[in-house]
Image 1: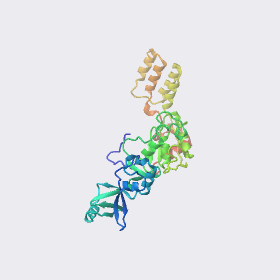
Image 2: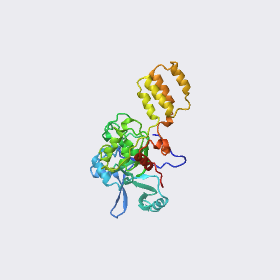
Image 3: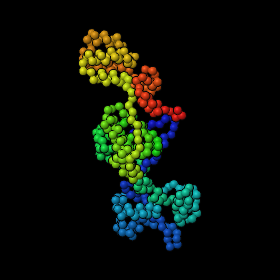
Image 4: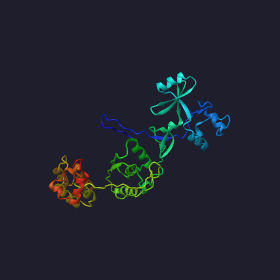
Length: 356
């Protein structure tokens, strides 16, 4: 993925996390109170042996996280399992040095921190993050994403789209990474509407643009299913719990020279093409780089011999910047007469700026 920003503005990123698949063996201590009601440091390994989670002589390895009994113990005791860390606030460090060989605690900016002889102890609970609605040990997302399944996306959203369909889980991550609820997500290449479907489920607004005809058979039907409460993709995630709702507006651009382009492509003989050409010459916007006199001489002399050659030349003649009418032309007399009153009112409402 490429990330761009507007000038000197900062890019605001919402940190994302992935579940840890292995145990971090740096978490090797357990803080508990002794008979004097004082905190003391114990070996996590010894405690696990006492509880018959580890065999005597066995060490704590990364794959111990596969042990469901250990997982249960760690989840229940995440506030008591610790590891040593280098960073420590000055006031906590001073307090721990003054109280040599004693575990001290300090409320630092609303968080309780522990230290022993100048070394801070970080609890396992600090590594827990909410991922897909579950609190689990997590690690900050890196720049290589290998945890998302691309193999089961073919029919997500209840529509089949064989080329370049993205998993909803991927779009969920990207949208959560750089937007907040209520923000607008723009996708200029809508395709099967994965981005729009996920934006809707995550309570974002969206704009989607698509030029292919399948928008009527794939993109729009998919969004209609999302509104009805479709339960594929991320719908069942505990932090999404999609039940349907929302709405969207679907509009098509008003064709201008685009109509001539279609007529050229669909023409079956030279006479049809020249009829289209004469209409274009009289009514359409012509590419200023094209010499029409030269084109007509080449046609009359027989230099353009095939239907395909003629089509290519006629397509070059069309000004591609004028395939559709611009909203700025809506009140021009020649354009207004082409628009129904209901479409005119809709456009005025849709493109209205704040304060109008």
